[in-house]
Image 1 (cartoon, helix red, strand yellow):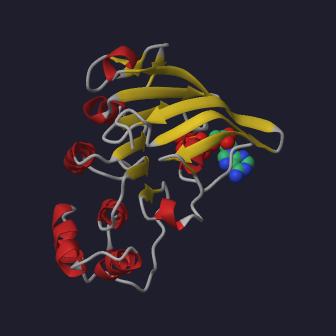
Image 2: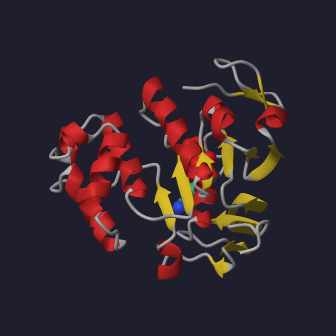
Length: 242
Ligand SMILES: Nc1ncnc2c1ncn2[C@@H]1O[C@H](COP(=O)(O)OP(=O)(O)OP(=O)(O)O)[C@@H](O)[C@H]1O
């Protein structure tokens, strides 16, 4: 792939539900090793955009490509290289933390999976919960498990929908370190977040959605302003960490 060819490209993407347009002509390029953060108020279209970027939903108009391929989660070539952490916790109630990771690792043909699983468990501070069932996890630990399922498998593109949910400040800091390590390793990251300070700390570019349209696209310094507890995006919308 040429160095400047985008890993993910959305061109003129719109999405209409029941005659209501919730995304309006979105263009977005994301390169390998780049982190793009997407901010916006509740209902502005962030999760819809991420689902379309993941090939889980189809745009009403426009196209999505992943490394030149039409984006479609049913295509095994896409699924093998795209990891998605959604905004809701989806777990098997009767599988332990380790068994969740084994399932994902086996499905993706990971070599020496047990060693790698040990590494990921330690990285997400889940080692002592390896034999716990999901019901015995705190909400933050459950969120860490969701992240772990993305880390235990190969990926070139990582799509994260509000991964900071339910994480305490220390866990959020480790999430930022994780995202930085991903991009340093060449993974492209699309980060949907309500946490402007997280976006500032990890993103190369920040995009802001309002009512389904992109109203800002630039570096964190260009788009975000204010201090750690009162970050706003240019355009006047107050949005801080939560
Ligand atoms: N399957 C669907 N059918 C109908 N409307 C939908 C569907 N999915 C999303 N919407 C609508 O699209 C709009 C955008 O929703 P979306 O979940 O993308 O927003 P969001 O920016 O991720 O919000 P939040 O910050 O609350 O997670 C909302 O008005 C929502 O009601």
